[in-house]
Image (tube, rainbow, N blue to C red; front, side):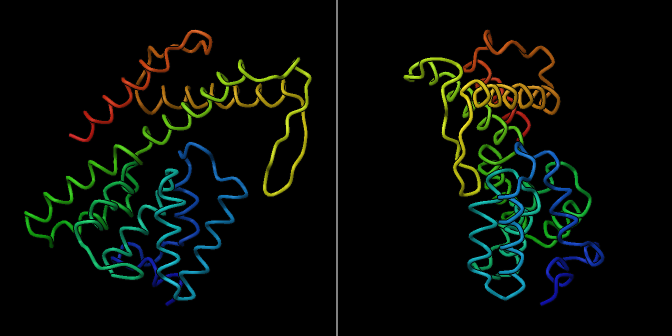
Length: 235
């Protein structure tokens, strides 16, 4: 199976590059594709083209789809629809397609809509229920909230460390190598990332009144509001 055939679920995808879709569908991910993520994307692409569908499916579902990669979410749906690497299941396929189409990417919407049109009403309703469950965990707002809480907790845990001063060395592991830098740089980087994620949440979630001061923000109230928003949008 060629790279083009891989995404020929419908005619609308015949001229779409897999790598191009993957890049575009990552634009609003919580963490913009770093070298590790891109390496995983390249690996799973090679596995799929080599016909190692079971391994490819697990990577798409468990490593990329869960971090908000919309192309990976689409591929999970595609593999459920075609039965490549997993038992064929239209209900699950439609649910994952719906999640992939969250950003209104035309190619993903076309795939979703064509599948829904040939499904029974009972199956359509089941897929809506599955989509609701997936959305609560893997929609953009949910993934963004997870990253915000992760950053927030790491900053809060700093208070209980034994670091003597802001210039103390902190071990940082990146891409398999270990390097050292000051705690000021390390936690400053986390703080900067957190601020960026909060601004992104404010933009895509419509939280215009979101508290921007990291020293005053109520993380529990923020979580409540985001989850409420996710529930309301899922309908």
